[in-house]
Image 1 (tube, one colour):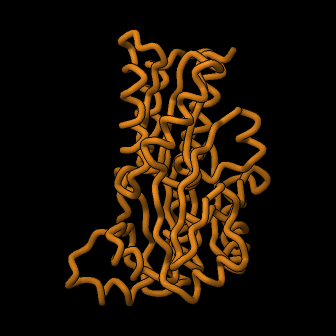
Image 2 (image 1 turned 180 degrees about the horizontal axis):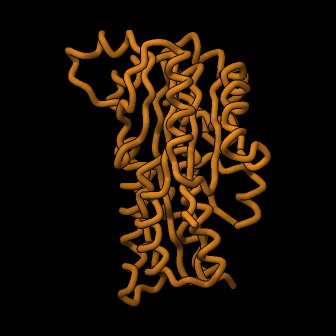
Length: 286
């Protein structure tokens, strides 16, 4: 029986093969779009959903409930000695908060609880969350104990970076995911900025005015890292820009090692149509 198992949520965007390889359990968010509600199973956004993103207001994302997390944790008690549960930034979703509340019924880490669970805020999303989850899954498989895994996760999340460009800044401003004074909304909406995650919160990294300049800024974001351990490129229907970015990145990071993906519906709805992004995990300099 494995000592520690790993749980995450459907915003992680980890490819299915890796989820299966490391036996990672994914708790899905839901998406409410008008009268329709979808369970976000972590699959890439579908073509019909891409069309809706381009023509309709973005849907509402719904975090898994406390009860849903409790059910998942209970189902794992007989399969391992504990769980490390790693989730999307608490500044973007209530997922982490609900997981932390559910954990309280199972006994705190390091205090002799019957089934200890450590809940970690990744301060990221998509493959920013995904890379951290995979690092923890490898460490858990190596036999590291739960308390050490939790401490490692809070350190390693500093090595994870995510940035993106998008055609539509307005929904991010309106939802509060990109905080800015309302007086600045019109000016920001006229830009094509490079956006990144800073301490779990979306923030403008560079105020570019055109798509071409924003794409260049995204490449420079990657180029500035002294060493890249892992890299993913994600897009929401941005195939033309994707090929251009991959060609440029290929000069500094092996293209065959770059994970290319369309994110799940929840993440795609946050990024918006035409989004193009990168998620990098820093490597050790040597």
